[in-house]
Length: 229
Image (tube, rainbow, N blue to C red; front, side):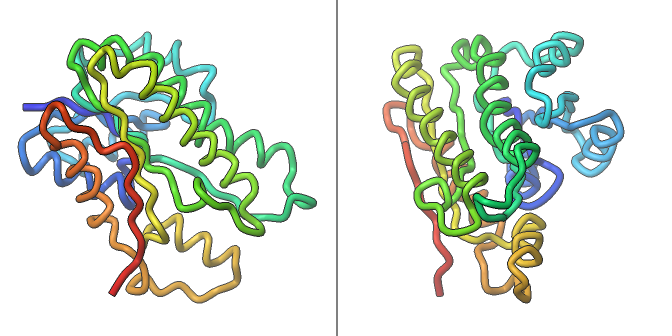
């Protein structure tokens, strides 16, 4: 039985991969932003454990995790949570920039740092759910795209640093996926949202689990998933 810690388990891709891993009997630890959210996650995903920590305040994660029990070893750390705010460079405030970078980039870096001892013990796997915007950012996507470009750099550097310790590092770049975040993006774009047009969260969960289940001695480093027929 493998042990995983997952962020963003409350909806979308995070909920899909959490459900799939629970169904196969793995041990799940779910990061929640507060005690109320943690209770909701435990009720929704029976058998899962929770850890409370706010990704919007990465500077407090060390203290928060230090007050709670954590697994002794981690087979995977899965960074699925993220935030998005669209807007032109001439419009976005420093508040939006700081919040986006904190949640999408600084918090994953800090959470990874804090859990590296457990990951090294298990010769574990760090998986980052990035975005097509992490490879190319168009108009209105500067803050989100910058955070995701930075997330790619974080993953690449981590792979180079920790490969000798047996860690594997995978980045998945989903195209538009039918999640609550995508619904928000459509509202910001002023477009009608039709979830049937986009990738299902379960398809991205399949990509994550495929990378996770590669035999030892092999590693999926980067995987792009796009909407298709």
